[in-house]
Image 1 (cartoon, protein in one colour):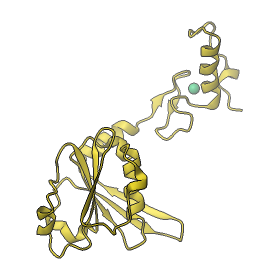
Image 2 (image 1 turned 180 degrees about the vertical axis):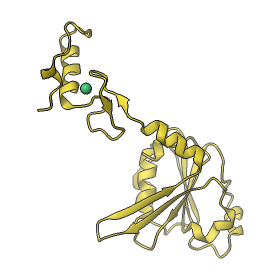
Image 3 (image 1 turned 90 degrees about the vertical axis):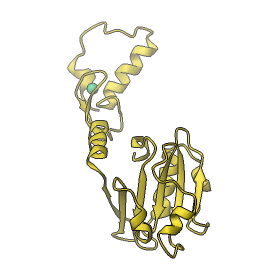
Image 4 (image 1 turned 45 degrees about the horizontal axis):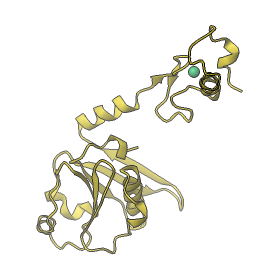
Length: 186
Ligand SMILES: [Zn+2]
């Protein structure tokens, strides 16, 4: 989801203790950007790795081994470059190098299998998020459909089936008014 909202040039600071899931999150980000997520390794590599994405690349940075923030600049990474998104693990170590509009993703283990994820971002990014996540009218009955709706862009399985039925019938037009039985959930 986060990846779909990125346009390039963003810096993402990944925060969390060892084992909190920073690399796992980076892998999801890679997948969302169309990179080969299997290539995203846990932080054993040297400072940074670049993965080719469908629209924009992901630069995965591990600041753990940097002894001072200036080393990030020395690594050749240009934060804010518009052809990529930088995701930085152990970003606390390079705090002074992070742009003011850095998006911070904090991961906290709440149990062995659960994580609480908090994302802090500048106001213009939050606006973009709320615009993208706003409910949209169902393509069939115009009822609002949530951003995470399982049957998106339809409000229900029923509306999705109504749509499918129209394609199968070869008549993609409303031939009769939609009746309540078309709209009821199973
Ligand atoms: Zn509907």
